[in-house]
Image 1: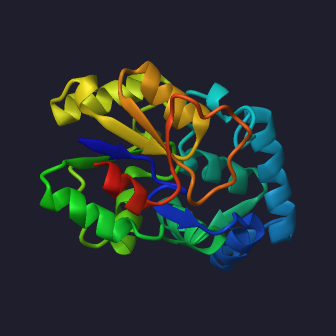
Image 2: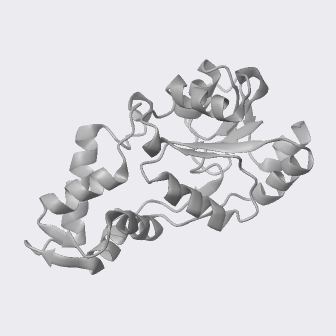
Length: 232
């Protein structure tokens, strides 16, 4: 079986623009007590994220417990005197679609077809604060013919990669031992070190992101999906 990371592996998301996402959310504000702008709200969100240690590239692997986005969103807006007219689950989708729309990484659809034709099972483990249903919906929209047996969003299961527990959950769902599973991702500490420490075989996909200067010796590194197809 091959398990995939989501962001910058299956899907190449545009550079995150929180102000653009918040601008769309504010269209649904029934009360804005202090007349907060999207820029002001995003500045508060950035401050909270900094306090929590989220989204800092050099420290991302140190945060191994997920903060579900519906909790974050409800605190953010209510603390700023803002009441929204639709549920936070819908707000998160509106925000995500505006802040960072995505497309399938180049060659991925053909690669997934190749795996299916050769009887190689697939699934997803994503470090993501959005709900599992939102993640599944986005993946199915972008990859409508995928054959993923399960899609694990860490927002639903407490633990984030590189914590071994999230990989062990996937193995239980798959009914497989670690040595029978490969894991493909773009983030070195979370995806490569994390999956290797859990006993899976790691594959470092570097086709859709900037890669830090790390010694790639003894790591299977691929630039595109055709390269991995040839290896298989």
